[in-house]
Image (cartoon, one colour):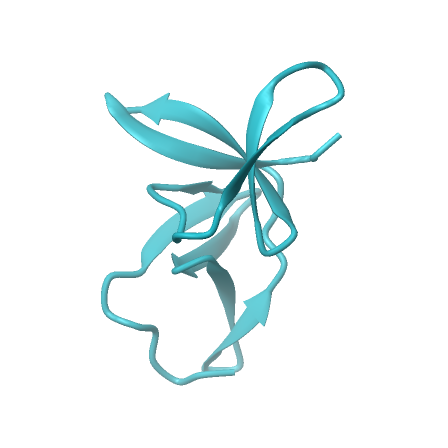
Length: 88
């Protein structure tokens, strides 16, 4: 866990939980600290780190994968973004 998040983090709210994202890592706050967690399906981030790979899902969609998490490229407010999805 960390006390402070890195500069440039973004926030995504899913099901009433705030997820803080930076460079492919998701955090939630607990007990005054930020803990590394697995992201929830539906979390949206503005970019992925270098090293993300393109994969094709079983239904034929192009997804991105980084650090074991699958992302669907989307457009949010006119900008490219990535939504955490189930990778199947």
